[in-house]
Image 1: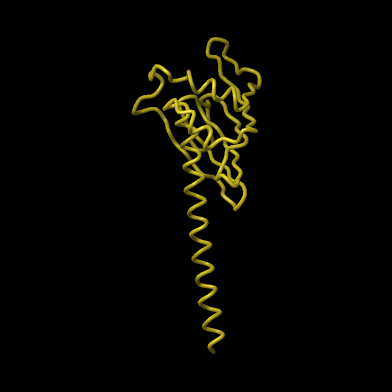
Image 2: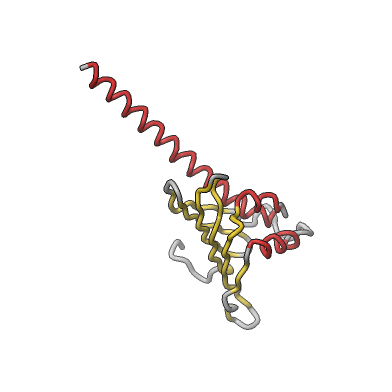
Length: 152
């Protein structure tokens, strides 16, 4: 009986620790995604160094209203992201209180995660990896504000 009680207590603590790990991972992934938005909104490249992997691969499509067409695939490695972040909202005129700043965590496991970001420029899907330095965004696929979405 004594061994049974010890086993039950051990399992209880294990499940509790696992639940805490999951909650922490979820919170950290969400924070990493918000940091990505704030790299641009707040012109804060320190957040990029904290939350984005140096091996970033970012690809996306911009909608040109005059041409009524999307661009070809636009690639942006980490250094170009830093360059853009320094100037995109440098004047503080791209963001207001009503500018979208939304994160939806879609999946979190112990090593990888996926989140959707909705921001002034459109939507981004962020693939993250859990590193020794915390969660880092390693892949981004984005597009300008969509004409439609299955969530609507």
